Image (cartoon, rainbow, N blue to C red; front, side, top):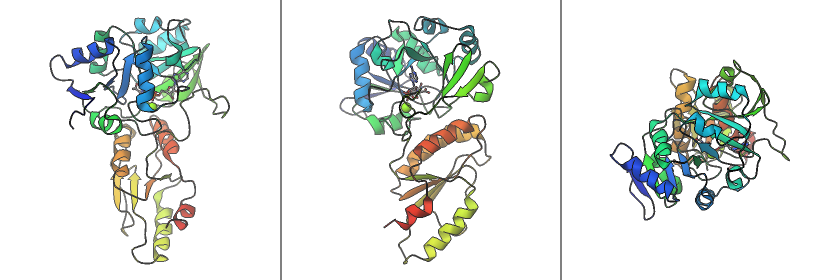
Length: 351
Ligand code: TXA
Ligand code: MG
């Protein structure tokens, strides 16, 4: 990975790298930085021009609000204007960590950051580089995931570079993200939690502290503007299977038998556990976790999606994972990435 004309890559392990990045944030620049979930594309929350640049670099529509990253609960409290006691409890329990809380905003938070909503999403990340960057910047950092809008979130500095090259002033390289998919976004209404996006903190864990309902997906008034269907998408068409692979292997075998030789699509398998492919039906196969650990699968998901996406495949076939714990977030991302409902219909139309 090399610097491009407008973007410098800084190794977070090197002396003064974080200070340099913080100085850039203070002077109104845009810096991609590591968090424990995915890399973020950050700017000073109170600098409207800098925040504007984030939307431009990502090509993100301005109706989709950003998460503000803080380095302490006190800093978060200054961004909100109403804080129910259950929010304080959740902050104590889950911060620093992959939980974003949405509460009514303090008027000082620019509308551009919240896309005009009366609430602001805030989280305190667990990554030490992120925390030091925020602390040294002296301001909360507004940051979406550091990918092009609608694409797969980056879990390495390399992935940020591939997506955004000439966009940010700096990319602060802090190694691969340990959780690998985004934070859980929870809006708090009185004492009820509204799950806007499943993520790094499992809903089951939140339910120890408050009742949680899932946000409505009304097309007219989505409760979370960023939860569009086509998010997290690979360029290659992706099909999430709704049942184990066995049946599909038979169908693919039959399909291949009815095609002229050499006219079978290049299919990549994204498998939860160890892949099975006795008949050589797949051009490539990647497993998320041989031991079927959901944590390990989450950490590898976006990396594997990006890898398969670069192989020039005709189709990516993904197997489902159990929908418990962080598995709910994995399935949410796979469903949003999945553009094909009817696999055999897609294949029969394939040229
Ligand atoms: O783990 C993460 O959350 C990463 C890292 C960088 O912190 N950030 C991230 O940001 O995933 P982004 O912008 O890609 O996703 C933020 C989500 C979007 O779906 C957005 O619509 C929602 O949070 N959101 C932000 N502010 C909101 C608000 N005030 N009300 C409802 N939804 C909000
Ligand atoms: Mg994102």
